[in-house]
Image 1 (tube, rainbow, N blue to C red):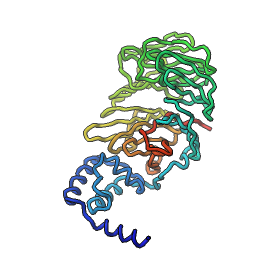
Image 2 (cartoon, rainbow, N blue to C red):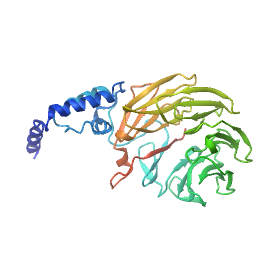
Image 3 (cartoon, one colour):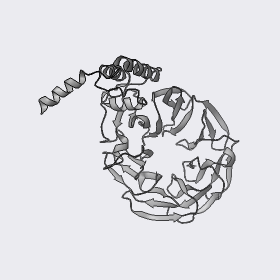
Image 4 (cartoon, one colour):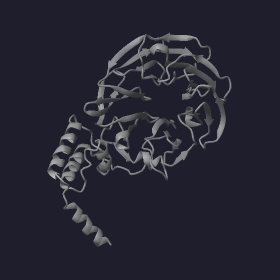
Length: 385
């Protein structure tokens, strides 16, 4: 059987697809355009995912001479210093991941083992990873890491984007167009604001003061006391994508489609950082850097940028297709980049750019026993030891 398989492989490798020369030239043009500005190197064993990420441009039969030439060029462009993994067998930094999938949220342990918590939608960690808050239609549920329900509340509006306060005593969440606050034991649920943006998740200021930032009505950003409702400040109309806080609570970071605005804790604008071409999302590290994902529609190219505390910007990674999320490790040394178009997670170390680890078949790993449905979303990397 082994001799027959080898003979078949040789026969296939010698066959050229119809219009091989034309296919080679067309694929070469697409690949060269997609990588015109350079892509950091990533692992050799991720050839198939890289081809898929190029929007089908390299579906010209990998065993053909044309396919071999394109494949070799892609290897030269994106090969890294560490081998790709077909499965996530361990996290390259301390902590645990919380991942939202079509089946529900999963907890991924440091050794790569996974636990499905149940049939829920969006999820978020509590401080220190002791509990998880998750949504299910009109319900907000608090779970332990084994998936056992501790309490739940139900509301008329669809519940979304729960966020646990840094001290663990409050949860902010959206119910319809309301921003609501509930104590961590499920009591004291109340409305903080009745008309807010459902497109912006609430963000707690680090500390014990229970101060929360959120997207207000008419595209403003507001900051208020979650306990008293007292407003602290409100911006002009900004239409934010995200509202984030620095790890020390000294800066409020407002992410917009073409810029990052930074305010102090009292609402004074400190800086405005233009970002091109189009910002998709951002994540703030425990060390103060801001990772920013951008996407350019022509050519279809995504970039991962890093902005340090002084405002200096540099590119960490670029590639064709869509990057969906970025999440920092608890120690701030590693960054998980979710590359939806390639069905990959990339683990990068900004201080050591060549130490990039790729993990393939992400959708399949969170759809065990069935056909992958959608690409999972990274809901958080918790927690510092």
